[in-house]
Image (cartoon, rainbow, N blue to C red):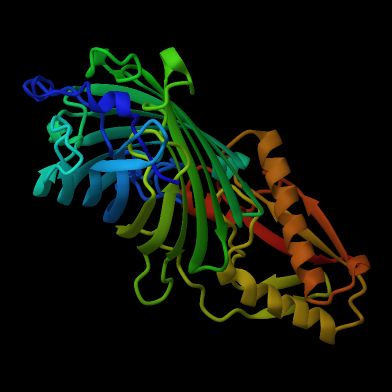
Length: 433
């Protein structure tokens, strides 16, 4: 689908517009600075304290801004080709607050002067231009890792650093913010919704066309990330914006786009590295909606360090307890068992398989005292059930397993110390028959 500006606009843009340029911006691809699970769509989880992300997205955009006859046929382009890179970085100052910056650099723009009304206007190959720099922060309000539902606030501001006479920026300071909602399904499918507001000083850049206006906008975005395995994921996004005064009625100021991408995050050779390759196209005829977009992203996000346990030993002691020499690890504040603990549970399952005289065991979940009693009780029950389900999946009969959560009620060490709390966070196996 071609992305057009109607013919009436051809006659109405003139050279004085560029004297003090306040203009439309064809750059609608604005990647998140913290390189979360999506691309332009924000996730609620901020970077952990002193964790950081550095990276870049290079994208080629085809036909983001064109002229057309009133019949809809293309007359000529204004911006036919755009090759640019977004350089970005972000850092977490606490586990719930982070900040980042995005610097867009345009390598090449095929530009046709809109002030020249002839159809055969000469193309200008512009090189090394700037877009509007974006500074953003993120306040995590609800932790998705604890509640399976996340909420965050992302204030931002665009700086007038772009070459707005070439439609590479608006030529004004532009603050705003986004509210971010997200959730996950079994830690494999992730969904996000962004609703934002961006403030502009109202500017008519074409005095005779009501639609040729810069004004406050609502920004919308939705994303899905499907984890194929530990290293590969598929990402889909839809994002759009609309001038509030003509909400989704303004042809020019209603761009929308869909993106599909694959992401590779090696877990062994270069943990923390991410490589994203994708493509997109516009869904409307709004300014910036392209016929085609191709993107490549590379980033490094400091990973969380998890200690790998040494080989586990499992034994039955006094016909009462199955003793394991290493802890079973779960995702933070979740009941999802981490892969590093699979060998431990595999050994427990093997022990039960070769000892049929053990008729029934109780899987017991315990926590430290951080958090409310009710929350810790529920968490311990969920974790005990996760272990039971894992053992069942390994071939242990369900009637041999009972899952019980004790919360923080049965400490074995001092909860006032870090080491004591670590000992209290445990899973035990008690032989009851």
